Amino acid sequence: MILASAGIAAQEPMLGDNPDGSRTPAIHLIPMLAEPLPGKQPDQIYPTDNPLLPFSTKATCGACHDYNAVSSGWHFNYADPNVAPGRKGQAWILADPTTATQIPLSYRNWQGTFRPQQLGITPSGFLQIFGRQIPGGSIGEMLDKTDNPEETLRLGLTGQLEINCLACHNISDDEDMGSAGGYAIQVLRGNYRWAATASSGFAYVTGTLKGLRDDYEFRAPFVSEDTKLKPPTVEYYPEIFKHNDWAFFNVSTAIPKQRCYFCHSNADVHNGQTEQWKTDQDVHLTAGLKCVDCHRNGLNHKIIRGYAGEPCEPNNPLAAVSSCEGCHLGPNAGKPVAGRFTAPIPTHAGIAPVHFDKLTCTACHSGPWPEATTIRTKTARAHAIGIAGVNKSPDVLPHIVYPVFAKGQDGKIGVFKAVWPAYWAMQTSKEITPLNLDTVKETAGKVITKATLSKDDDWPDLTENDIAKILSSVAVPATAKPVYIAGGKLYSLDKAGKLVSAESEMANPYMWPIAHDVRPAAQSLGVRQCQDCHSIDSPFFFGKVAVDSPLKSVKTGIEMVTFEELPRLQTKLFAFSLVFKPLLKVVSILSVFIIAAVLLLYGLKALNFFAKYFNGI
Image (cartoon, rainbow, N blue to C red; front, side):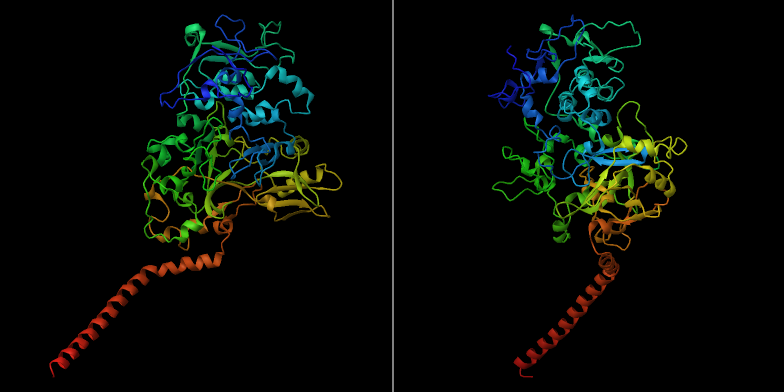
C-alpha cells in the first residue's frame, strides 16, 4: 500500500476522495500511523512498540484523504480572515465569576463579538479554555503563532491539535469525547497529540504533560527519578490490532446525532431542572432524520448551515434546498423538489402572505413556546455540558436567555438566543476595548473576594460601590478612561469620582438565531388563530427579555417589540383591535343575513311587479 505524504495537497484525487458512487460504507481497515518526524514518512504503530505512540489523524486519515481540503471546512476555517463570516452563530463565551465577566468571543467577524487576542488570549490559551469542544485543526494547528516564548518551547512537547476526524465520523459506541480520560480532558491537560487517540475507543490514555520539562522526548521510554511524574501513556486494546496489525476504523459519513450533540446540546433551565425526560427533541429527529441529512458537506467540509440566503455549494444541487423553505416548499425550479424526506408541504391556510415577508419559518416553529419572560438555557459549548466534572448548577455562568424574538440580519423577525455582555474595558474617543483579564484580576480580586463569590459559579454579589472601587483602581492610559459594561449599561466615573451609567451599543446583548428544536406544526405559533401573537399580552410582542447583570439592582426586562424594531403603541392598538374580532365576525354574518334578506324581499317585490305587468294586472 502506497501512503501519500500527510498534509500535502494532492494533485489528483486521493484514494478516499474519489468514490465510485456505491452507497455501501467503505471499510477502513488501515494502518495506524504516528506523527512523522520532520522530513520523514509516518511510521506504522505496532502493538510491540515501546513506547506506544498516539496515532496521528493527519498521517492516518491523510494517507487517503486530502487533509488540506478538509481543513477548509466550516468547523476548521474560523480563524481564516479570508473566509466570509456568514450569518451570526453562537460565539464562545468567556465567563469568569472572579471578575464578573461574560463576554462573547469569536475569530469570525461577527458584530458584537471580540477577538480572543483583544483580551490577551493566545491560541494555546484559547484551547485551554474552549478546546474541550473544538474538533481540532485551525487554532489547534496555529500554536506556533504566539509571541510567548514559553508556549513556543512547550509546543514540541504538546504537539499541535490536529483535526479529530473521529469526533464526528466514528460511529462506534466506544467513541469517548467527555469522560475522565476522553478527548476533552486530554485537550484541557494540554495533551494535544494524544487527544484523538483517547477519543477513538482503541486505547486508554493516562498521564499529563504538566510538570514535565520542555525537552521531554515522548518517543522514548520515560525515565525519571520523580515517581509523581506520569507523562501521557497510551494503552492500546489488543483486540484492535488485526491483519498486518492494522486497525478497523468504524467510520461513516452517515454521522449519528449523538456525535453532534457533544458540541450542540441544549439544556433549558426550568426551576433548576435539566432532565431530558421533561423535554421533547426536535420533530425532525423524532421522525428519524439525522443532522447530516440537512447539514451536508463534501470533501471540503463546508457544511450547509441551512439558512435562507446562505451561499450555496455550486456542485451540490441539494444545497439550495436544504433550508426550511427549500425542503418543505421547494424553489421555482424545472422539477419538483419540495417534500424531501417526506416533509409535508404546508398550506398555511388563513395566514396572511405578509407573514412570510416579515417572519422567518423558525419564528413560529422553533424553540420553546414563548412565555411572559424568557427562560435561561445551558449549551454544550458555553457550559461544557457532557464533560466529566462539569458544574451542573443551573446558575453557573454564562447566563443565556431565549426565546428572544428580534429582527435578524436578513431583515426578518426570527427567534434568537441572547447573552448580555459584562466586561471591563477602556474607553477612548474612538472606541471601547476590553481589558486583559489578568490586568482586571489584579484589581478586581481586592473587591470580589471569596465572600462575594457564589459556590455555583454564579454572579458575585456586587454593588455599584464595588464597581466604582474597581474602576478607580484599574490602570489605563492617560488618553482613556476605565468603564464597565453590564446589564445593557455602560458604567464609568464622572469627574467627581461618582459612578454614572449610560446607554451604549456596546452593552447590547449578543444574539444568534436558532433553528432547533423544531416543534410540530400543531404546536406552531398561529395554530390557535391570530391571538397566539396578536393579543394585548402576547409574549411574541410584549414578553420580557430578562436583563442579566451582576448588579442586583438591575432586575428589569425589555419587551420583545424593542428587539423587533416595531412601534409599541401601534402594535398594541392592532392587538387590541383583535379583541373585537369575534364580535366583528358575528356582526359581519348578521349584516350579510340582513342584506341578503333585504335583497330577497326587494327581489320578490320586483318579481311580483313584473308578474303583474306581464299579466296585464
